[in-house]
Image (tube, rainbow, N blue to C red; front, side, top):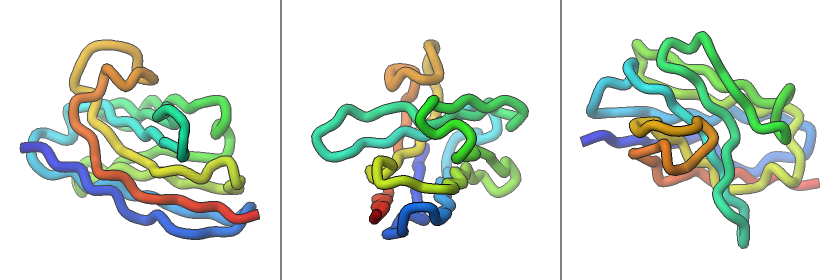
Length: 124
């Protein structure tokens, strides 16, 4: 059974940095593209970033492009999201997910396993 566990969330001030981690167990982590999504209170879950299985290709939502960096360490079975220059609008629960289905990397429907989420709160 695949399990994804996020960590690294917390309360930070605008302009600061934060690194989220997603530890994977079960399955073959290195064979799958992975993604990060977030959900703010009262809003739909939205795409943040994605990375291909080898780490050679990444994609980002326009709202985080240039500030966030998605990476992975297949030997450690861990996915990362480095968040720099955070803004209050980045406040949300952040989820990592495995892209185990066909479809756009920005679509929730393309992901088959999800973590429980980690809260990121950015104060102004």
